[in-house]
Length: 594
Image (cartoon, rainbow, N blue to C red; front, side, top):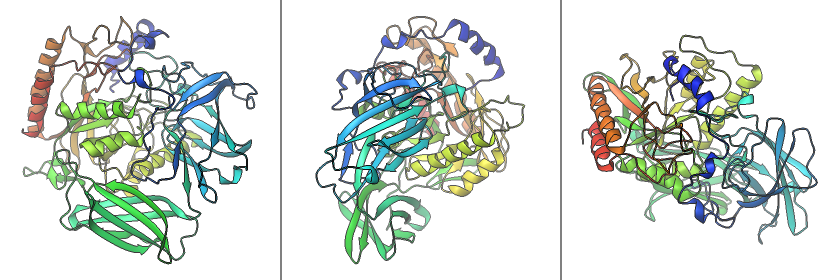
């Protein structure tokens, strides 16, 4: 979201005038929150592209305590917290802040299912913000740094013969007192800066796997050669093992390949059905690891056949191509915040709803803004057909538009590189993701040329914006500018596509559906839905000629209101679509010539 100089004074003023009161989030909630219980909180399998039968959901009530950062595990805990909701959220049942001088502790005893004896037991966390230490039955089992990537700790060596196993976590999160990736989280929420998330905020779960198993796999669709390339990493020795891949369409086998587990497999797809926003077709995929012809491990998932590329249209202008055809990509900036769960949607249905509304309003894309979602959100984008531009969450210091890249400390730079790689590795297999965005508006921007080149080499199947807005370094696939309310476009170049990475920000506070009753913030506010709709249509009327001039994509701010910011297409509680839905859809579809 833009922070151009004309807005900096306004934002500074908003710190003084418009900071949300601590009790504000009690005032609104979403329709899904009322039905959330410890027994049903996010029960879906959290990793739909790699599913096994033997798994145990650990969402529900855990013991919690807040203690000084240097203290050992507490002898007494303060109460119950509902995982996977962050402790600052209403749905956690706690709604407390954790300072940088403190750590958040979790504790839970678990009973392993029958039949898991003799198997490796893996403890998975979808995400924990930010630095995590894990103990199992009093022994330190592992640690992790990073608030957005899933991580796994094998706990088999720490299990005992007792009926119940005790898991303890300690989490430290400095929020904006640290250099780490943290996105829009701040200790003092105001204007376009929001309440922090600390601790477990995605599903926690256990999984039982064989001694030798599929640890992960990468799939690369190649529509030009009607093939899917599959590479697997094996946990344990892979010597002499084979891997079989089977693709099915509505239960009917359409392709199969078998080869060494150490090699890349090529699954030949005869006349493949392609994935696109208009036809988001997904094949089912089964991978089986075998020894001497006997299956020892099987995982199931899915994949989409699609290609994203940069090419010239009939007029010689660089465009974004999907499946070898130019496609104007148009959608909202999506912040992924919720009034009751903050970073965590109240339910899977809520995650799905945001994608459904985006599609209903005639958009074909969303830019996931300085946040990373759980796999389930990308699953719904894959399933429903929504293109995703994925930001790396921002952190560290800012630069102004005319300044050189910052110089990060060695520790900060290493952590950024680690978390960026984890982001790409964790979400590589989702067909909906077509663009990586390492930097936004100079925030934490460093080594731009190196990082852009690294992403291009590491994942050549997608495009890269070197920075969205502000300090473009003339590298990558796209030149991206921001303009509020806009619209505008960058100058055309011979090698990159021109996109409008943020524009709009048309605001409307809706009484009874705001985070606080007064002093809500917007780039440009209107009095009612009719006036807002009229001005939105006028804005898109101005955008359409830019497409004809060479603009390849545009991102409207934003999917929903967030805290005191009221620039959303929907209210923060998702109860109201603020504009005339039919008019907005008709207007948006014009961007694709419909």
